[in-house]
Amino acid sequence: MQEFSLAAEIVESVQAFARDHAHSKILDVGVQIGEFTDVDVEQLRSCYDTMTRQSELEGSQLDIEAVAAAVLCPVCSYKGKPVYWDDARAGTRRATLQCPNCGGAAEPVQGHECLITTVRVFDHEPPRPTSRQTTSRAS
Ligand SMILES: [Zn+2]
Image 1 (cartoon, rainbow, N blue to C red):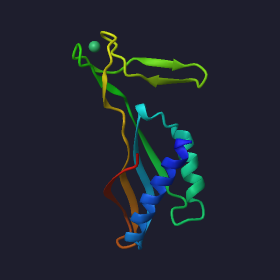
Image 2 (image 1 turned 90 degrees about the vertical axis):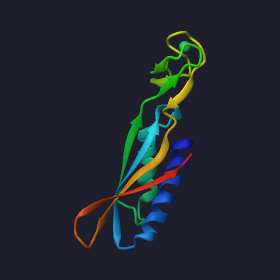
Image 3 (image 1 turned 180 degrees about the horizontal axis):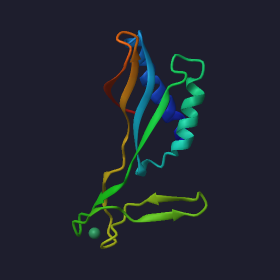
């Protein structure tokens, strides 16, 4: 179950961040999840909530930004949305690496993202939320 291990990696990264900023409370964690990763964002969110319960991260929100898939075709130079395949059983659409223009095998240029983009913390001094940038690859 990849959502579980991904959530574990996110929690670990944010806990390390929280240890470095002991006076701050973690408010929310921004993550980018690409369409090609096949991560179920609702499952990821519920895994995160379960794991952070009764920890210093309890109550923090996972702010998930979906990154649309895009491909580049080496045959016809098409760049843009890929062909989608309807997964009727799962009730979802999956991005494929097929060129919608010529049907050739395209390469992914966007949509493999799976990383923490921001960690928003509440600093007790001064009492207003601030944004901090941290980047960590959780593959
Ligand atoms: Zn093509």
